[in-house]
Structure formats: C-alpha cells, structure tokens
Image 1 (tube, protein in one colour):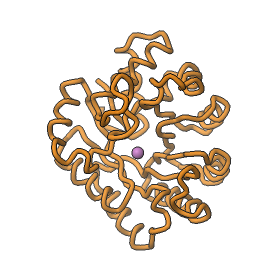
Image 2 (cartoon, rainbow, N blue to C red):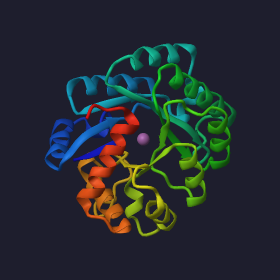
Image 3 (cartoon, rainbow, N blue to C red):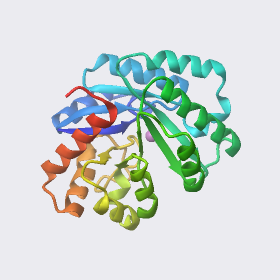
Image 4 (cartoon, rainbow, N blue to C red):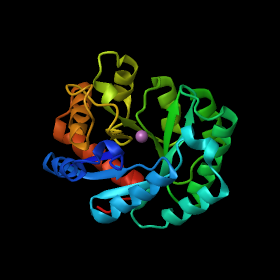
Length: 255
Ligand code: NI
C-alpha cells in the first residue's frame, strides 16, 4: 500500500495509455494517487480524473511558471473546483527562480494569494520551490498555511528541512533521491522523522533509477520507497506503510 502524492496523469504524455498506466499502478500496490493541478486546464482535468477513480484524488493550484496569467477569474474557478470532495489540497504553488517563467514579484504575490485561498478552502498546500529557499521561507513564515502542507520533491539542505519540519510541514521524496548525486537529499531522508515524509513520482517527470530517462509513472514510486528503506535501514513494507499513513494524515484521506 503506497500513496503517490504527486502525479500529473492528466499530462499529454499519458494520452495514449492513461488507463493502462493507472492499472499498472494498482497491480504494483499503489493504493492512492494524488493528481496535481498546475494550470486552470489541468486543475479541471485533475478533478475530472479523480471523479472517475475512487483511489485518485486531485489538487487545484497555479504553478509559479503561470503566475503571470492569473486573474480574479482564476481564483473564482479554483475556489469552485476546491469544493469538490475529491480535492484534497491547494497546489502546486510556490516560487521557481530557476526557470523564472513569471516575474519574481508576481510569483511572490500569486503565491501569497494562494496561501490565503488555501486557508479559505481549509486545504493543506503542495509547495514547489526551485532556487528560492530564502523567499519561500520568508513568505511561509508570514502566511503559515492553517491546514499544513508538503514541500514536493524536496531537494534542499537538512538545515532548511529542520526549519520546515519545525513549521509543521511534511517533506516529499521523488526520483532524484535514487540518483548518484543525491548527497544532500540522502542526508534529509536519513534524518526526517518517520511521521513527516511522503513519496511521489511527479510523473511524467523525475523518473527514478533504474528507469531514469524514460517517462515516469506511479508504479515507479516503489523505487523511491525502496531507497528510503535502504537509507533508514527499515523494511520496504514498513516505509510503504509509514508514507501512506503520513499521506492520509496530511491530505485528510479516508482510512
Ligand atoms: Ni509537479
């Protein structure tokens, strides 16, 4: 029983075989999938997908890449979608200073707005952070999400992780944990408390070893679980159970 807490199954890379990919995940013991919205269109698609499968849930939010295109109409749409009982979080939201596809001041304004909207919708948040550690910390300390949240595909230092854990956040591990250069992330995975981590694929991106380079899919989240088990010296089934219990608590999923 494993929960993939961050998938993009609505992506066009799954257009030809989405159903097969979902069935393969079930066969591989993936009990729950959270499908993440990142644009207006993908939020609608995520909610539609979740309504068709009992074990798939959705989130709604606008990625920092698209912050520049947000209007009041965007927030009306997302608030409406968020009332669907299958919507379990607001995200992915945050700051991306690596690709800088939206001006940074707009990214910050839209991030803060969505932290407020998440509170209004009483949902936890899914945070994307790329090369924006300082600003992310400054913003979330001032606008602490009331229902908590998770840093998706966490790749920062243990120092920053400790601060996020103190603030009540969960950390999510993904494919890069299995890569050769994962030194910092290995340290975080070794030290993260057993009740504060979850796992994800971020599929179709960030494919774990040994399939790195291919399209990612939810069944591959087992590789991330196996790596954490190795690092923490725990049985794989124990890590699967912990990560799935943590996901249920974080997203308020039915037992
Ligand atoms: Ni994502």
